[in-house]
Image 1 (cartoon, helix red, strand yellow):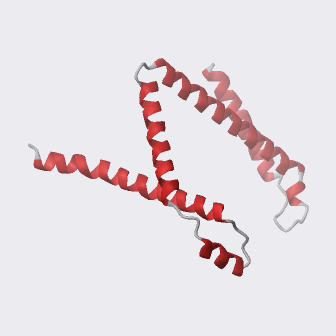
Image 2 (cartoon, rainbow, N blue to C red):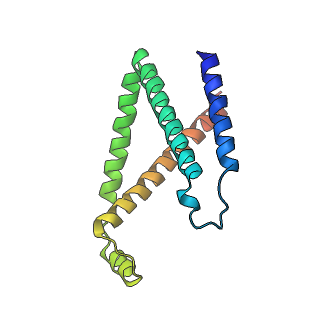
Image 3 (tube, rainbow, N blue to C red):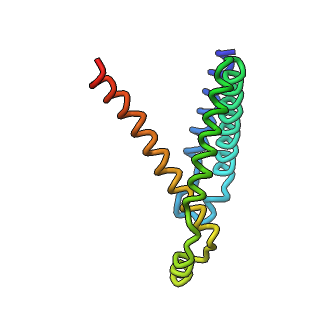
Length: 145
């Protein structure tokens, strides 16, 4: 199986190298619709699909094969859902921001402003949690000996 994968990767690499050198110049207005460009995108989509399927398959098999990992995963997802819910509650649908964006020619809604605020709050909360989880063990080792 390992030899088959190596041979397939070498073949894909050689095909991609040939396609790379057969690309039209960047000055050509029809470069985006060339056959070699389309085939390179097809190869990219196939490799991306293989990577996604493989990572999901091996991740789920590892998740389901270890007894405590499913419980830990559910706790982590629950904690993330709580952080998202708290962040959504803390964010505001700021009407002046919507008016300011409209004056600049950018159409937006209050829901979009609220979602952006929620995303920023999630980022800030998770950053604080990460820093605390990095600093606390170091402080504990320093003071508790």
